[in-house]
Length: 41
Image (cartoon, rainbow, N blue to C red):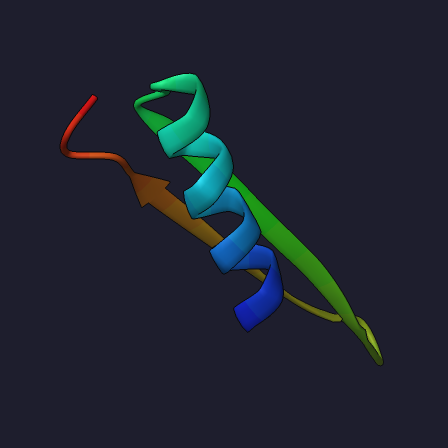
């Protein structure tokens, strides 16, 4: 999940976007989602 959020943070900065969502399936019916806000956008 760290690589997903790091990549998302870079994309938000590069595109001057305000919000982004990263999600991942971890198997066994479980999953995780993270919403990131770019305060400088």
